[in-house]
Amino acid sequence: MPTENRQIRLAARPQGLPTPDVWEHTTEELADPGPGQFLVKVEYLSLDPAMRGWMNEGKSYIPPVGIGEVMRAGAVGQVVASNHDGFAVGDHVSSAFGVQEHALSDGTGVTKVDPALAALPTYLGMLGMPGFTAYFGLLEDGRVAEGDTVVVSGAAGAVGSVVGQIARLKGCRVVGIAGGPEKCAWLVDELGFDAAIDYKAQDVKAALREAAPEGVDVYFDNVGGDILDDVLTQLRRGARVVICGAISQYNATQAVKGPSNYLSLLVNRASMKGMIVFDYADRYEEAAREMAGWIGEGKLQPREQVVEGGVEAFPDALLMLFRGENTGKLVLKVA
Image (cartoon, rainbow, N blue to C red):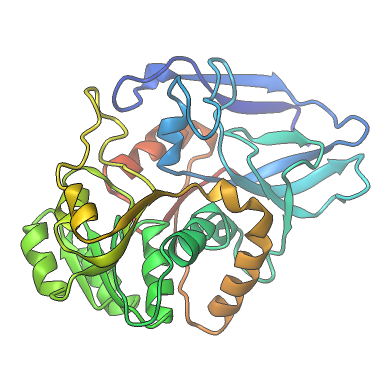
């Protein structure tokens, strides 16, 4: 067993995109688990847009990562030493173990996963936080119903691609907004979206009028900014807007751009609601069970883009999210 543990720690609050000086690469002596603890060898790390918000000081839905702390990250790995009755050597587990090669845990917030049922990276995507976000955000907050027209931005990402697939499964017309012809083709040709809009090459508002001529019943927003504003002009009466993320704004150095077309909510008696997946933590098992069934039946297609390089590659790999270089769930292989 290794005697050292490599980690990535937050060294400074970023201004705009995280630059190399934001991170501290550290190596510590690997500690043995104490009573009631177990040691996990981290195999895959989850890379998520929300990480950018976790680096900021200030009030949010979760405390910020402290300066000098190991960067927060979801992960899957294998128990390699244990003094815990509930976790045995060889068990595969998932939790927020952070950007490091090994993690000590007392079991709080840790879930066992089965690599025989799904590939380990899938537990960071469709069967993890992004998938649960899509499931509860669409079904609970979006209150989606058969026959609805559902529009999702960031549609080729980890959350958006699952939102669209679940909406299709529920009998909805699904329109995805993504960047680039390859992503749009994937949404339509492989995932079964009814239409895809390339925001890099098309006028989103005009394309949306064509793709959703009767208007939008549910808008699942992952990007914010101009695209949110454009979709607000196309809402139907009683529409639901789910605010899940705003990746277009996360690295802004000026004030966040809010929607100027918000009066569409009034005119159309529509609602806009923020969605945080942690609010549904006591129902994760429900979501995992149903989505695993859909995967097994071929109704959902998980997709993970795995980046090699270990923890040292984390700072560069994270930036792929903000350059729009990922399709599906972005995962970093550690071991």
